[in-house]
Length: 551
Image 1 (cartoon, rainbow, N blue to C red):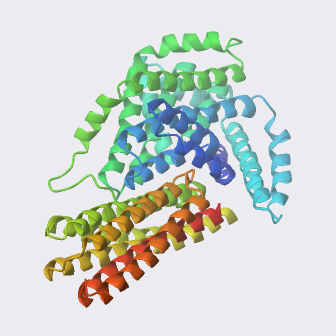
Image 2: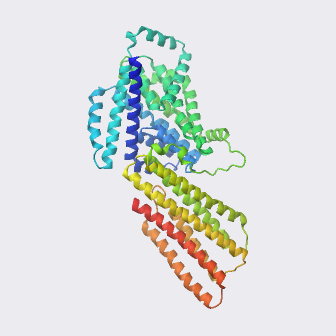
Image 3: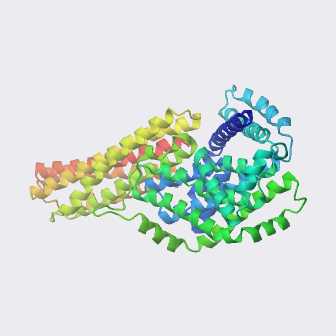
């Protein structure tokens, strides 16, 4: 009974340490993660590398997977891009096995775990955010290996427990049937503990204690690869179809990988003995061979299946098809994604969601240019599209504010807190851009209903203003990208051009009114249109300025 409680307690300490360390690493690597994610759309290979690097940085494939599902749910990643990240995360998660194998079994755990905790914990009392982040990483690292020590101590020696020895013998004597049995065991353990890293620690401990041989340990590692996909499946509950497709791909990819490698476990393990030579009874050699198998298996599967991404995408689209009347347009169901536990990654999503919101406004304004530039046409479908897009910006603002508010309450670093405050301001400014676009479409409708006509010069001024504002919206969208392409000087130049054109058009319009070239009602509509477009430019400038000051 004491052994069972020690194992459960050790597992709990291990999981808690892993979570604390992962949170600290995410906070420390926040800006670097943004840079990595900015490059993930270059090609399929870049996606795999990005997924690998992000998972290594945060030491949690679950956090990476939830992030990918979240981006797909928000419409910020295509299915193909998400697939590359998932494949890379599968390789990145094998780093944990190497850390455990090379440190947890190579060194005397108590000689470094407690000193690391003792040094790291006082750092949490310092005022510097960096110190607190380092404290989290150190304390989490120490607790992780302390939990591993409890696991090792909790597993009894088979030589001293004949009943347990007989039980294990009864499970390992079915040949290929035992392999399948231990694959299922790996799946179940990973689903229960919700961490492939924790199940890997259990597998390595069992190997070190010689409870199981390398073949059964490899089988459990294959099962852990399938079991870890439950995290993505839980994350997409209530999410849209694009997110569900990513989760289904994760499950499909890992299951196919197991089926591909299963017939070749024996020859692969032979190769591992060449890669990691040494005494077959040495616990360190045994756990290193399991870690090597885990990494090799994931690399082989990724190399083979990466070439079949197009075919796998078709299978996933078949598994999760669109229902009748549904479109591919994604929404921002943030709270179903589980990213509140990963604040540094969540700010990346919030920024890209704001970029998506500006993109909606850019589309609205593009349709507006068509409506305002063709006053003699009704263009009812375009008008309806603009009104629907404006409603969407209202909904997106509510979701972003809700998401950021919850993020602010989740215990974040100062940098995340500043980002959240900036994002809340930006969400309001972008929503006001949508409001002014709605005002413009209402003015265009009134102009069409009353059959008002503008002079050629008046229409040219409107067209010039629309080009400038359209350019400003595109620049704002780029500002919200991971690297923020527009400098404040360039943005200020656009703002000045819009203000100068507005002042110039007001003077020229006053002269036209004095000369009797335009009636009062037509003139008021023109002035209202110019004012609303100038306001759109103001809010674009506010967004870019806020981002520049927060950088």
